[in-house]
Length: 318
Image 1: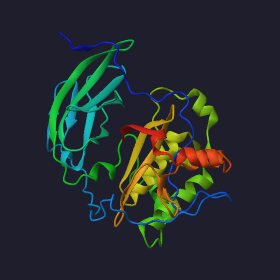
Image 2: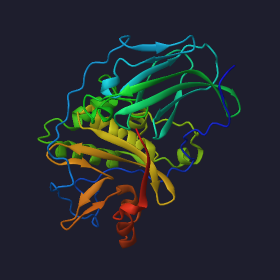
Image 3: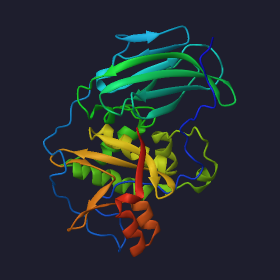
Image 4: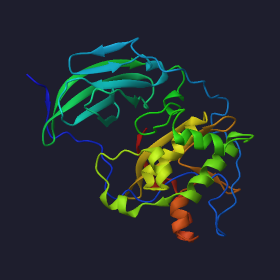
């Protein structure tokens, strides 16, 4: 008998995602922008270094049946390759659940093409289920397998491309990031160049925000070409550019107040993880969201809002 999951609750991006979120490392422009500087604090893991990534392996460790295949050849690097082989023209989902942790739900094409899925919750036991749509919101288990993750380095899931942060050496996103950061003397210079390029060249896509599908996925190359997007697009493009330059980055999906939102955290050697897009105003570390700030026209209320970490609640990390 088929193991049927009834009324499956799938993680979706609501129609209105809010405005784009990203980091301000040198201010976000405009006369009201505060000066931004950086200092190492004890809260940062400053002694950690960024690991080198490895070439993708395939076929070394594979688990499958006649409907799906889970390639765990790159497990220690923090990601899986999954494909559906059942031959049905139906919606396919992948659910990845860490034991006693969060369940992540992704789309998977039904054409038998591998897609990349990250394991972002750290070491431990993960269950991976490939699901076929039966009708409506009902899904049947096509194949499932449980794996134990022991990462070579904890930053690795945030260095490789995946379904949400889609880039590669041949992609325009990586090429643009390389051009922007040519001659940069530090990671901060790279962050600065990428940040200013995005906020200068991209505009918010209000039409897409009104009509975005529940299974919407950002495509950094398409966003780069169109020069517009919603907050999810801004964050994915920024994250892809940074990862392509060897800078670990987390695409975080959650809430800013009551609005579904997206932002990124970044790791910089000698500083550590910069969480929730932090900036330093000379007195304390504060949260920074340049789209809210620019939209607020320098309003003190906006600065108070973005400086209060309690307004931001992460839900998923990609």
